Image 1 (spheres, one colour):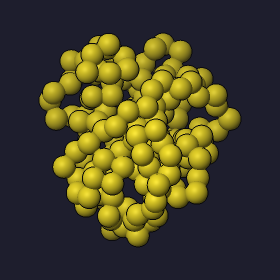
Image 2: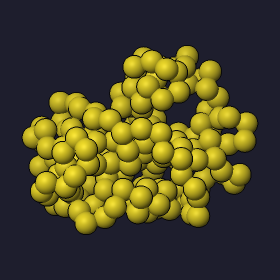
Image 3: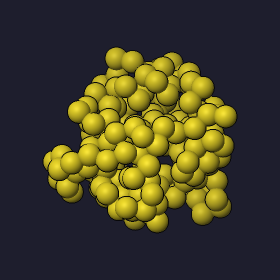
Length: 169
């Protein structure tokens, strides 16, 4: 069975994104409240639909839920921009795109605390989900809105979607 590498090293940052230390994935996801940076990429098509990935059942956080098209951790020693390009390539085969910065904010759950760096881009070719994911598809915005609160999406995606695209949250 696949699984996340609990010994993977992440930077620990302050709320401005300045690196103040490092910790393992296991430490960051074990309820320590260590703030670590992640990247999110919202991928739209020319029809205004939003691509979402399906998280595989083996993930340590929110298995089996629909989530932001690209989401991943910034590795220790890696820039946010490099992590965004790497994650988009690894998860969806998207390369050579120009991301538009949307926002940074702190997301906190009982398991972790993340400094989310959110971006968006538009693609003309359909993404090609890797084996890291359990597939994905484009969703109409109305379909997303009507599915919020029904345990279909990750709480992080729902909050971020409302914050960035519904002028709520």
